[in-house]
Every structure is written in structure tokens, then in C-alpha cells.
Length: 116
Image 1 (tube, rainbow, N blue to C red):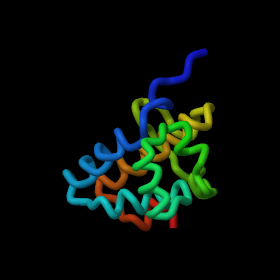
Image 2: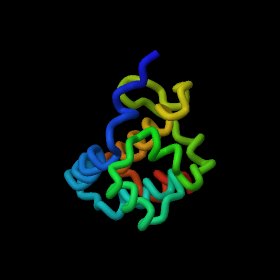
Image 3: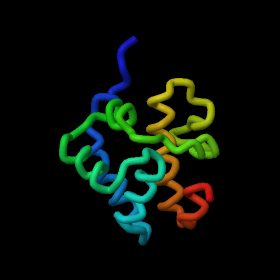
Image 4: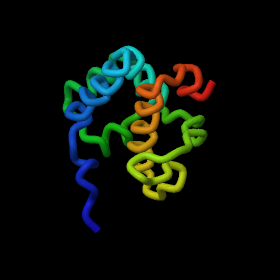
């Protein structure tokens, strides 16, 4: 079976869309970065290096220093699919991130988004 197109897209090509979505709703780039760091375990410097390298989504998540164990608490629907029911691990990680950015844009507090 062929890989989904998103796997080969560079994370850096989608990242500005996350920022735009958040900023349209009065949120900040720093909050987007904090969500990404929480989910993946990247430091800010490591995140910026991944963006600089134009790492694709598949490797962005494969190289993540420490995927947050609390990410399993992320529930809900993204693109008509329940994130907790996605069986393919990389796609689930991508949709977890999409869901967190959606929550940020909908005005949820960072504390709730980061499942504290």
C-alpha cells in the first residue's frame, strides 16, 4: 500500500498553517511551539532544526525525542475521524497534533490542551 501523501510532506511546509490558524484566533506562535514541544519532546532548538532541515512528517515523528505519554488522552474528531481510533501510528501522531492546534484555535486554555 502506498504511503499517505502527508508522510512525505515537509513539516516546515505545514507549520506556517498551524501558526496562521492560531493567530487568526488570537493565539500565538509560542503557544503552537509549546504544543509541538509537549507532544514530541523536541526542545525549541531541535524543533527549529527540524524546520530548517525540511524534515518530512514521517521522520519528524520518528525522530521525536520523547513522544508524550499523555497524548493518549487526546480524544475527538479531526477530518471526520476519531483520533483515538486511528490505527496507523504516524497518522495518529499527525492527527493528535491537528487536534491540539484545533483546540488552541477554539480558545481552550493551554493547561487543558496539554492535558494537565
